[in-house]
Amino acid sequence: MSPQTAHAVPTATDVRAAAERIAPHARRTPVLHTEVDGRPLTLKLEHLQRTGAFKLRGALNALLGGPPTDRVITASGGNHGLGVATAARLLGVHATVYVPETVPRAKAAPLAATGAEIVRVGEHYAVAAEAARARSEAENVPYLHAFDDPLVVAGQGTIGLEIAADAPECDTIAVAVGGGGLVAGVRLGAQGRQVVGAEPEGCQSMHAALAAGHPVEGTVDSVASSALGAASLGRVPFEVLREHPVTPALVSDAEIVQAQDRLWEEFRIATEPAAAVPFAAWLAGRVPGERPCLVVCGANAQWQRVD
Image (cartoon, rainbow, N blue to C red; front, side, top):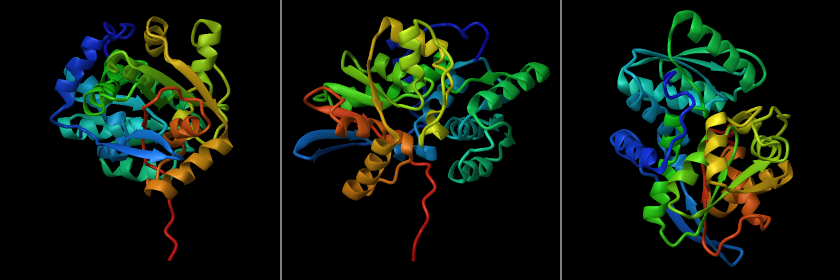
């Protein structure tokens, strides 16, 4: 969040420090050991996190570990904004959150309830982020990036630490990839376990970056784009993944929707599409390992009750 750390590359030590820092405020979410289609499976139920998504971890770590401030500006497809707004409220900081005009109501409503200032700009995350950065510079207020920040990456990595401690038998961890903050953080916190980064075919920020050798802008066109719609992988996550490689996997929108439905049918877990991406990859046989753990990263979806 500060100029001094903007391009730093976080380490496993930073993830351990983040775990201690955020412990008083973030939930240690449970793991579920189960079996699907005759295969053992563990689910990290991060959708039970405060705010309904993992983003609170990175936001807390950035605000607690960065320079003291009474204001913060960010941009988000929804979950990061809610994480920042909630962390800010807990810590007595005023938050301004720029969101795309397409942000789902299920994410916008709780965001407004935090008392944060909400500004809607553009159709995709990149447009909202550009507007947020411009205001940050104009008003000299710290800008907290959704994924391209070492403190945010380290905070997300605490999920990996918890899996290693609470499900030590798991040999693989699969997570969804948008801008790369979660996959990079979990890779640092996984304590040697194989990590799979699963992406929608229509939002391939990590695949594109790994193929080009650097982050590049790509298309954003997926049922999961409201959460995984980063136009490019973050520079900080890319540097982590260059030093600590992960296994990539792609899934189609049809596979994502089927996985989302299956999570509901099997476990009554009502996720947003992005959170079903790792499960989709696992169902399709694209997650290796004898005892994999899939991170169910968020549940801020729009569900309608039918009487």
